[in-house]
Amino acid sequence: MDRILIESLEIETVIGVYDWERTIRQRLTLDLELATDIRPAAADDDLTKTLDYAAISQRIAGFAAEHDVALVETFAERLAQLLMEEFGVPWLRLTLRKPGAVPAAAAVGVRIERGRERAG
Image (cartoon, one colour):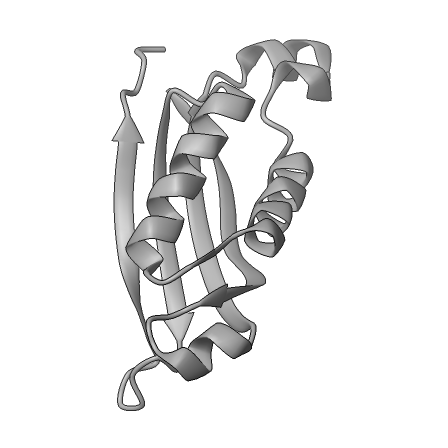
């Protein structure tokens, strides 16, 4: 199975467990690997036959603008479900980082894998 990559996508959203966090927008950074078969798109040079990373990136930004949650775990899980359902992604790996959440760390976050890769 081939993979579409989206790396270091920066979005802003309301996220956090503390009261002060609920009043501001914070930056999150995402890395995504999305399983797909790129052969049909490559054969015909046709964007409609693959995962459109620009459309996916825009949808992620929209999701972030529409939702506010307390935990990065919740954000990651809901986003993974949305991407799988709306874009027909059978498998994905999502790394979500929250820079500055812990002063001594560059970022904290989660990495999840959902779905099953199909043989290519």
